[in-house]
Amino acid sequence: MAGPLDVLPVARGVGLPWDDEVGDAVVAVANARAVHGDSFVVRSGGDDHLFTFSPVGVESFYALPEDVASKGVADYLMLRRKLPDEVFAGRRVLPDALFRRDDVSSYLNHLSRALDATEAELGEAGTVELFALTRRLGHRLGLASWAGPGCADGDTFERLVRAFDVLDGAEAFVHPDAMAAVAAAGKASERQALDDVADVVAPVVRQMDSPGADVGGLFGRIVAAWATEPAPVRDRGVAMDVALIHIASMSNLMAALGWAVVDLVGHPDRARLVAAGDADLARRCALESTRLAQRSIMARSVLRTVAFDTGAGIVDVPPGWTIATLLPLLNTSAAPGLEAWDPDRWHHHRLADTSRLASPMLVTAFGHGRHTCPAQSFSLAAMSMALTRLLGNYELTPQWDRYPRPVPAQIGGVARSVDDSRVGYRRR
Ligand code: HEM
Image (cartoon, rainbow, N blue to C red; front, side):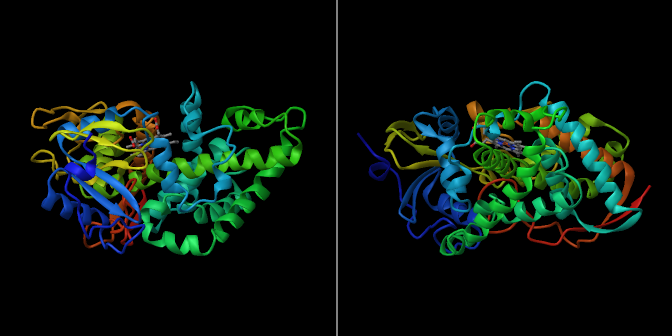
C-alpha cells in the first residue's frame, strides 16, 4: 500500500494560514502547485493535506463518499476554530433542513420585505459601503426566515446583528490568521454573543405558547423539535439551533451579491437589462460573479483509508488526512477565457460550453456531486431579485478607483473585499 508520503511530493515550507503567516493563502498554494504539479502534500500545524488539481483528481474528489471522507467533519474542524462547541453539540434542526417544499417561496417573501426595509434605510440619495449593505440585508433576510416573529425589526434586530457579527463563523476562513487570538481568549467574546442570542430569542420562543401564536415556518419546526423539553432547556436549544443555522447560511450569499453588484456597475449595458427586469440575465450574472469570487477550499476529512486516484496513480490516504482542492486555482484558469466576466457562458446552472475543459468539474460556483449546494436555486433567485430591485430603483456610481481586492489570507467561501467598496446612489 502506497501512502501519500510515499508517492507524492511534499511542499516543504508551505503552511496554511491557520498555522503560519502566509500572506496570500491562495498564492501560497498556487506557488506549491507551480513547483510540485497537480497533486502534492502540505503538512501544516500537525495536519496533513493532499491537494489535488488534475482533472482526474478533482473528479475523484467530488466522488468521495461522505462516510469515508467527510465534508461535514472537515467543515466542523474549520468552524470550531472560531465557534464554541456548544453551538454544534445537540443540534436538532440543522442548516441542511432549510430547503423543504415551500421554504424557498417563504424566504423570497422575507427577502422582498428585507429589501423594502433596506430601501427605507437608504432613502433618496447618499453613499454606502456595498458589502456592508448586503451583509445587513442578509441578516434581515435570515433572521426573518428562521429566528421567529419580530427578530428582523427594531432593537431586537440590532441586538442580534451585533451578536452575529461577533459569531461570524466565516471568520474561520476569511481571517484564518486571527484564529490563534480567538483560541487564546478562550472564545470568550463568542460565548458572550451566544448568551446574547439566547437572551433575545428566549422570549420569542415563550410567545409561541400563547394561543393563536404563529408557529409556522422554519422557526415553528425548530420550536416543535424542542417542545418536549423543560422551558429553560427548550429556550436555549431553540436559540442555539437558530444560531447555527444563521451562522452557516447567509454570509457567502451576501458576499456573492456584493460582487455581482460590483461587476454589474462595471458593465452598464448589462446593468440596464437587469434593471429592466431580465431575471434570466440577472441569474447568469449572479453565477458568473460567484464563480470569479470563489475562494473556497473544498475539503474532506478522511475517516477510513481510501484509495484515491490523483490522475498520476492511486494513493491510499489514511484516516486523519484532509483531501482538498482550491476553487480559485481552477475556476479562472482551467481553460482559456475563464479569467473574464461573461454571464453568457452560463446556460441555466451549467456552463454552456465545456469543450475546452479537461473535465467539466474543474469549474464551479456551487459545487459538484453529492455535496452540491442545496441552496443554489434559492441563492440565485435571491441574488436575481436583489439585483433587479437595487439596480432598478437606484442609479449606482462606484467610488472605487480599482476593482476591489479579496482579503489575502482568506481560504474558503466567497471572497470578502479588503477594500472599502463604496457606491454613491440616487433613487430613480
Ligand atoms: C452564493 C451563495 C452560496 C455559494 C457560492 C455556495 C457554495 C457552496 C458550495 C461550493 C458547496 C459545496 C461545498 C463542497 O462540496 O465542499 C456548498 C454546500 C452547501 N451549502 Fe452553499 N453556497 C451558497 C449559499 C448557501 C446558503 C444560502 C445556504 C443555506 C441557507 C447554503 C447551505 C449549504 C449546505 C448545507 C451545504 C452542504 C451540502 C452537503 O454537504 O451536502 N449555501 N455551498
